[in-house]
Image 1 (cartoon, rainbow, N blue to C red):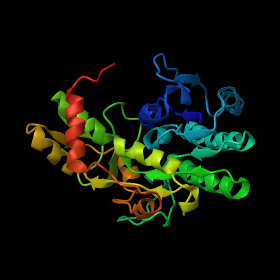
Image 2: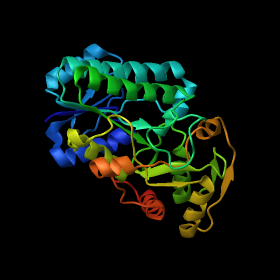
Image 3: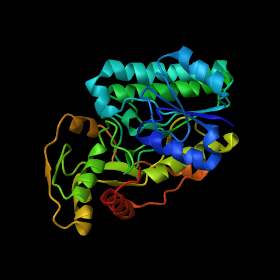
Image 4: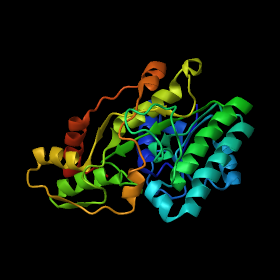
Length: 312
């Protein structure tokens, strides 16, 4: 098996490439991103997912049989540049699906997001089948990508799979322009001994997940028996929910002098459209999803790593 990871230089892509390399070996992974990588433990190919000719060339030249398609502009970045978000998120996904169909790729995995939800979506313990009316370009394009994945499965038999991520927490790579980035920024500031000004209100509750659990879930879904999957592209995964105020209090247990102020910006309007918690039961039943890290364990582990220099 030869695996292509698009968006490999992003927050999720960086850690997914590492995990896949450990599992399958460096020679089985091809990392792809519009940003060049001078240092890479795997074969790296520079490409723009909006260029279908380049994508097809890489698939053919590398003998790719499975694709993790992660290339995307996130919620906050997408609102700053909706045209670019549409191009990368929508045209890029269409190109990946067309290339996978034409070149007989055996499986495509495309993670989605709570960004697909809008103000009409229920707030508590939201199941995958619910009201979905996104109001951001990120959410619109990711929901359309879910539907395209379903379409290519039904129409062409392409084994397309996906899950909806909550906010993701990682100490290895910087935030990628999402609305939940405040949590990483807050912990990083605390680890540096600095105060933090939060761009969301103190009581804004959102679902979250630690990156090791997020990566494990994506790989687990990619390996699941297709016959046991009752859904294709919209499984929910989540570990816990918290507010900026609760995160500040948890950090203060370890760093008592840490100070936070709150100055909501345009990202508050995005966060207000999203649910407070997700129902992950179907992912648990169909392919065994579970989380290893709870809220306190995640904060403690994040802070311990952020205080220590990360090896280059």
